[in-house]
Image 1 (tube, rainbow, N blue to C red):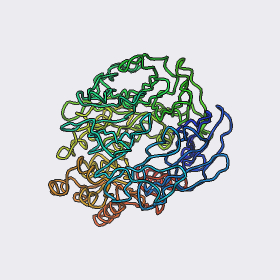
Image 2: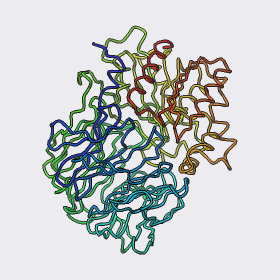
Image 3: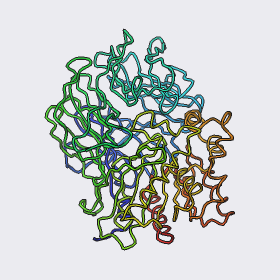
Image 4: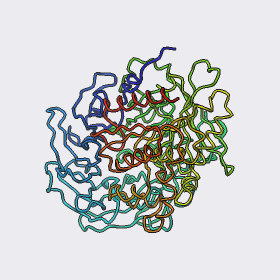
Amino acid sequence: MQQYDVERYLNVRSAGGPSFGPSGRLAFRIDTTGTPQVWSLGEPGNWPTQHTFYDDRVTFADYSPERPELIFGKDEGGNERAQLFRLNPSTGRIRNLTQCPDAKHRWGGWSHDGDRFAFTSNRRDEAVFDVYVQGREETGDDAELVYEGDGWLSLAGWSPSDDRLLVVEAHASFDQDLYTLDLASGELTHLTPHEGDVRYGSAEWGPEGDSVYCVTDRESDTLRLERIDLAAGEFAVVEDGSEERSSSGSRAGPGDGEWNVNAVTIDEDTNRVVYARNVDGYTDLTAGEFVEPDRIDAFPEPDLPEGVAGAIDWGPDGQRYAVSASGSSANGNVYVVDATTGETTRWTHASTAGIPEDTFVEPELVHYPTFDGRDIPAFFSVPETPTPDDGYPVIVDVHGGPEAQRRPSFRGVKQYLLNHGYAVLEPNVRGSSGYGKSYAALDDVENRMDSVKDVRAGVEWLDDHPEVDPDRVVAMGGSYGGFMVLASLTEYPELWAAGVDVVGIANFVTFLENTGDWRQSLREAEYGSLEADREFLESVSPINNIDRINAPLFVLHGENDPRVPVGEAEQIVASAREEGVPVRKLIFEDEGHGFTKLENRIEAYSEVVDFLEEHV
């Protein structure tokens, strides 16, 4: 099999984030120039037009419902303080609408007449988000503060009559509330009073403005699509997640046949809807029509790559919708689906950098036993070459979050590793999302290290696999996955040949003290509070057990990281060197929580490859 270097794999492009304009032109983001920028297409397969040319990434782009213009977001150097810009695609003129570079701005959508837009921002107080409304021609201080918040607020859109906003308040990753905000009176109406942790997400106004649809686990372990009658304050279940993928086979994992409905998008003019189920990581996408407020008649299924789909946007006439989709062996592209027939057309053709698509490897969905009798879901991939006599070296790649999930989407670095003789295990250890709130809560606070035991169980499962060399197992992960790497190396040092920590947490105390004010309370809900749990947080911090590491370590970070400050990398490297651990460090001055610029990603993973070749 022909081998390609890691730079080639990192040049595989991805398109996504589609948004239809009022004329039917489609805007999207693609990383052709090295970072995601705004491009657009009038017809499928045509050469697209590029509209933004920044070194930094564009985080979203949303067309006006009435004019040939769009608003997009962009931060600087990965600092996540996104500003909002208005783009006229025909003239190329771009105008900074927010002009407040020290604050975050979270997009809340256009009004239906396209004259105004809404957003939340922490410009008044870094620790809280307020609600703002601004005219499309206004800039900076012209934004009207319509509601002062006292926590983490985001917006889910304008009511059909543009007199109210749908507000989401996040208390923790698995605990939210929904409100309506009357723009004339400033009155906030609480739609979802509850006790304990309940998720309310993917909220959408009903077509008549008299109801709200959302996904929630208020009376179930997994998320269901439910409708809230605003006048009566009553809930009704519309769709649950019990239907399985026809190709999924038997399920041994924590989902046990009950899966999350994790997204919903409604076209108000046609009463049409698209919703998605997350079935053991794979997306089942369904389009249909509300024939009654609580009943959807489904249309034929779209023909999308088997993997992950989302970022759905209805066309201006409601006859079709655009969707981003990718799979383990299919890089990200934008597809347009005829709602009633399911006929699917690929609109973008993101380059695979000359690598034949049939060389990309599909994973096997496996479930391995762990210490308490549970089964842990994971994706296991092996190279499509003859197995070496001593077996393949294997990368155990742990996702971040922890309330996240490794799903079968395209990842260039993974395909490089498979092309160069590494097997890859991607576990969804306890604490992962996608399998219900009970599974996600299994690692909370005092149970933190049980998730590390799940990683150990994965390595034990690999030990019995005939294609794996048990003496060449590497821990790799980013963000919370970086913590899992460090914790795995300190708790079970005998298992590992090397570790790669990308923007990971080394010390929970300093992490919570120094992370952005806007997210500290959310993280304390997951990990424990500095006030009540400091001793425990110190006990599970890898920095305090660094003397136990036996394997060489590579630590990578971004200088501008607002989530896991770069001090986490600095202190783990310093402590490891004091203990004589072979350690390599790479810090990027113009990156944040992860690496978005192509040249930085090439440098980072070229060095990771060198590190693995040296030690594995």
